[in-house]
Length: 132
Image (cartoon, rainbow, N blue to C red):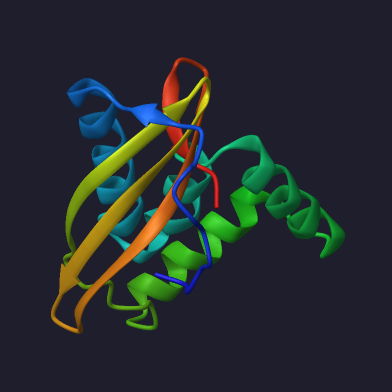
């Protein structure tokens, strides 16, 4: 996970178990996309518009499409040039919800060690998405 300086939402109220589980599942999905070829679509599907819109603008600025990136990733993976993504265990605690924004303390563990960071979430399309 990239380093961040996020802080828990000071104005947030304790989140429900349902919110906590949904946020935890979102992080788990992003960190365990199944394959290198699935990485970009998984990130885009589970991130808020504040994250995905600049990503898509950069892809377009480079004269590419999402389909081209997905195909290049698939081909790289088939040729053994993909990135090995370690299986990552995820747990989420200290969920604080303020309307459609939330924060949570995410503990990730994999073969490379473990790390805890505060992650920010945004409720969009009826579900919690990463919004760092």
